Image: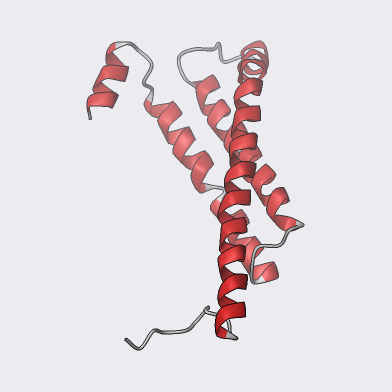
Length: 130
């Protein structure tokens, strides 16, 4: 609440932009579902493609919301300016998503392999009786 009120007082808060931001993040969920359905697990080939796809979806949707917000004219020139100014942020988003996916799924795979080598069977689906 405090952040939203503070942002509104300096005119950096826009409900349209926040809606676009949340929609952009939510629309990447089908990519994860597709990855799970096609592979059963994260694939080394498909995981980077899904991360790039999620970053791109977020970039496009959130920047369309920024363009529709109060900062750019709603014209072709305003759209080009909005997306041009957002390119550095896309690079940061892409790098963050790739690093996060690598760490998250890499750590999961390491734990999974070590657990299989120690117990002799995969831990997925096992229930601890104690």
